Image (cartoon, rainbow, N blue to C red; front, side):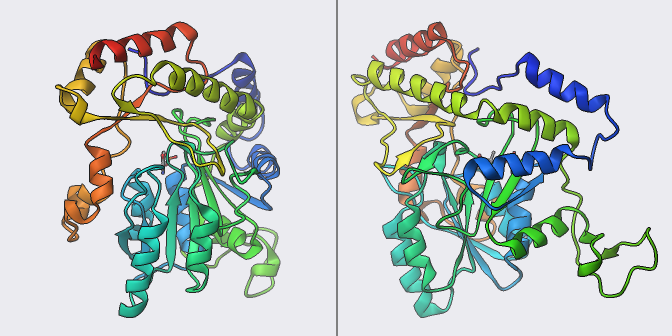
Length: 385
Ligand SMILES: *Cc1c(COP(=O)(O)O)cnc(C)c1O
């Protein structure tokens, strides 16, 4: 089976991790700050806070933005559940904004309409989590313009988009947001096995996120409420978690980061090949907004079901049966039983539901060989014609 995504591990990655295993620090050593500084520099952010997953990064980002009970968080229904769950962790209510039918990202016009209504009913969100689906950035400038007048904070869930660009600047510089989050899960663009990072240009947000990832504990005398009792002294200032990244993970992430541009370039070559070879099939290829240079975490096709005799589920299962490890990103979050219990109805977000009935992610990763790409193309042709 050709998977939809997989990691690319070299001897240099293995050596970097082995070196850490033989060093003094398996956790809380020099590699985590080194990884934070290197990625922040690469994407043009001031501060990076590395954690054990993007899910944790989203949680500490919401905590830093002071999201709590009585507040609201909005996001897109077409995302991994973590983009919404971070709001629930903080006791906030979660709501969704329907997607754009071309980019599959949160729709700017739907956002404008929902904000207008919410302003009248005093139900505006405190935090908006935008998701750069498949690696294609959202229309950040327009989104920031819409939300700024209400003082709504923006988190970019850029789990799919490290190495991508928006308006020719790197995703992660948070030009139009408060915090950007990356994931280093093995299917994503670079990996640290598990891991994530929150980046920001706001020193206070960075400091709050550092506290939240490690029990709310500080060893910095300047942050303490009294002079230290002695050299052993630390203080817990708030309620935090143990969300720390290990040195092994940071070393792997750092090593992978050196190949980030090459990974994204390879993904673009795969995309260009697919674009060319799949153009005549009864499917919609991933449309790209002119402001965007995608990270291409995913290559999503949409079936033109009116031109097909087979159902979406049938096409999907035939592809899997023939060795193509397709996937579906994502089941709209508001249809999950947990969110249904919170009162959402499937037809509340019709564009997300239309997308869900047609979308399929086909194999896309940097080390996908020419012959594997041919196999994907030939199998799609066989199943769809
Ligand atoms: C993968 C992913 C996450 C969660 O990342 P983890 O590092 O696995 O916690 C969150 N949001 C999106 C959009 C993702 O794709």
